[in-house]
Image (tube, rainbow, N blue to C red):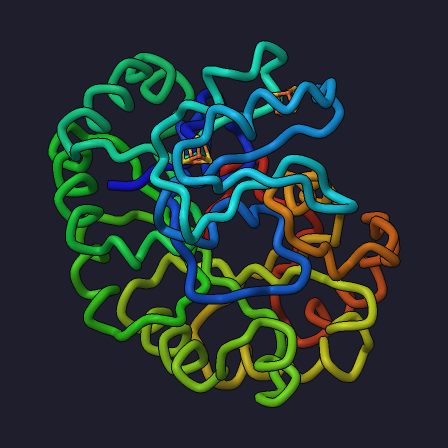
Length: 306
Ligand code: SF4
Ligand code: SF4
C-alpha cells in the first residue's frame, strides 16, 4: 500500500484515540484540497522553501536533471522524470527536501497500527483510513481492515466515493463507520471544482446509507463554491430524501494546505480565499437541522456515530 502519513493519537476522525492511515492517490482534484501530496499515487519529492539556503546542491546531485529553480516556488522536482533515488534529499543539509509517500506491505502496516492497541482499547478508538482516496487501494485495504476487525479493532473509512460500487463492496464488511464526502449537488459545478462528475458519488452515498447503516456525510464548506444557502439546502434535501443518512458534519474551509502546493510546484487556486470561521457555518447548519438532520460543525471529536 502507498501511505503518505500515519497519524497516531488522532481524535477527529472517529471515536476515541485513533491512528489515521493516509493513503496516497486520489481521482478528484478539489480546488481547496488540503492534502495535494495525496493526489499522485506514486511518492513525490516535497520542497520546503523556508528551509532552503539556495546552495543548489540538489540540482547537482540529481542524476535525471529533475530539479530546477522555478519562480516563484524554488527548487522544484519534475515528478514525471524523477526516479525517486533520494540523492537530492541526501544532498540537502538543510532538510529542505523530503520524499513523501512510502510503499508498505499490508503486514507491516498492520504491525505498526497494532502498536497502539492499548490506546484504542482504553479509549474506544481504532483506525481510520483516509487519503487521498483509500478505495483506490480497495484490494489491499480490504485485507488490512479484515485483519484489524479480527483483532476487535474499530475501523473507519473516509471517502469521496468516486469509485465503482465494487470497491465499496470489498471493504465494507470490515468497516464500522464511513465518512462520505458530498462537495456540491450541481453536476456542472461539481465537475468544475473537483474535476469529476457527480452521478456515481450520489448513487454510492444513497446505496451505502441503505446497506451499511453507519454513515456520516461530510460537507466541506468552501466560500464561493458551495456555501450559499441554495446550494446547502439542495445538498441537505438530497440527504434527507434520497439517503438514509441522518448525521452531517460541516467542515469549514481552511488554508492549511497552501504551503504544500508551493512545495510541489503547483499553483494554489484558493490563494485569495480566507479561512472560514466555525460560527459562520451556523446559519447553514440550521438549514440541515430544520430538515431533521443532526448537523455538527467541525469533525467528530466526541466519537458520536450516526
Ligand atoms: S529523488 Fe533522485 S531523481 Fe528525484 S529529483 Fe531527487 S535526485 Fe532527482
Ligand atoms: S540542496 Fe536544499 S538548501 Fe540547497 S538549494 Fe536544494 S533544497 Fe535548497
